[in-house]
Length: 345
DNA sequence: AAAGCGGGGTC
DNA sequence: GACCCAGCTTT
Image (cartoon, rainbow, N blue to C red):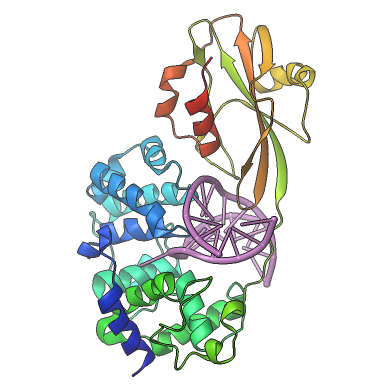
């Protein structure tokens, strides 16, 4: 039996009943695909359900404020996905009367939709013969066909895409594509795959060469940048504080945070007081003290944020102050959300 | 071609 | 601690 036949047959038995598998409506498939980029299915499910409930149609999403979208996205990470999602929803509603295009070529032009997502939507929603290549597919193909080209090199990406097109089954492309990814997620797992019980073990090149554990090959290049964040948590007599929206490029764009003093290294309270006026306009603080004695390290995949929260008691009432009890309404990074959760004055 | 972009699960 | 996850965009 062929590679694709075995995948289809396996999928028929092991298909999980995921929420987005009850439909082929482009809006819902799109939503699920964007959320699942670099994200495990289990982590994405609750967000998907929340979004479908809050925004049943693309017009509903288009009509929302970006802050609302980011708030519901909070905790899922890679927030450019949420910003692009919102921008594309507005574009589809305004320019396409709320109807998604049905070809790879048109889909891939949309913000936040790249090769993978355009292929997934075209095949799943419209039965178009497009091959998907996600992390699962890279792994399955690399092992079964014994390909050791790095999956994160230009050459590797092009090779695997071509290979995926060669072996796809266009007679049932929806199930084939989803089946191949499901197979990677459940059977051909990154660590300790069950090769004994694998329906593809006979033809698997990696298994024959005892190379399962070294495939796929990936060039690693993780340089982790250390940063030192000092958040200034102002508190006035009304129990109000200040938040700022992060602007420009970099992490957490358009999310909110406390006024930030970033430094080259860990600093003392004296230095915080000295630099206070650079970050916030304040008549005169009555007291500045450290909230977390032990600096906490918030780990992103490419940055370690050594973070301290400083409580700054304000002498006068803050202008544009936000009630501490209202902080939970703003979209914030998990780092800030955890602080807000724990903060008791 | 390479870097930047989150947060969480798994081993 | 290392690796990975239904990747995309910018440089």
